[in-house]
Length: 317
Image (cartoon, rainbow, N blue to C red; front, side):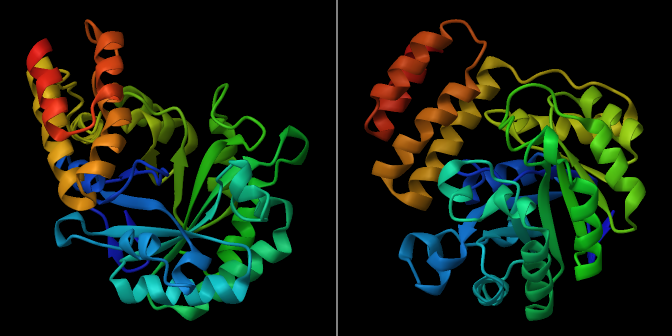
């Protein structure tokens, strides 16, 4: 698959997830065979005001390429300027967030709220495409609600604006992350545009990945929550698509080993105080479904240092 001038090794993509797809996690996903990694969403205003925390999110490691950096906002001029900033940081692809359902994003007219304003959404997409030289993608949802399903309309506007590829999450904003994703809307979008379509929603196993591609005809699949605590999913899906063979799940030892490595990377990237606290969620995801997972989660939440985490793992290994 190709997005603009960027050729991917395979059609399995890491979805942008706030608080998850930072540099350390993107590197792990890439090591596991992910074809393209997306960053957390970055505020256009944060970039323009040169907020230190926002600028830190733009850090890229050569080992993770190709990498797409996602921006959000609701003003065409501001988004265009933010896109230029992101391009200068070295991003291979710039993505426009039109799918985030959280109130703190939508109340300002950003994220999925833009699906309620197709004309403004078009202006933003066209402005960003015009401002940069790298490919621009956009991520949308099925619609705001079941009464306002407009993914096909938005996809056609995206293509008209010069967007290189579009990712479609098969849920409405009203659903957030509940219920089942509607893969039929992904198929409808694929049938309505020529640009590549990336399907997103409810991919948790290699079978799901193959099934979505077969049912929708999408060009690539995007894995979100199925990758939380489970970067192995990229290796499993890519291997299955290539060979039809299901790889065995990671052992407890593999899970603990990668958990510790992830912790090291977070601490190195963000410092011990922030890294340990962010690792609490990751630790719970890595150990979900394992024996004593509830007790592990409790002890992770009490950890305040890297040594605390190591001690917990030693206790249960």
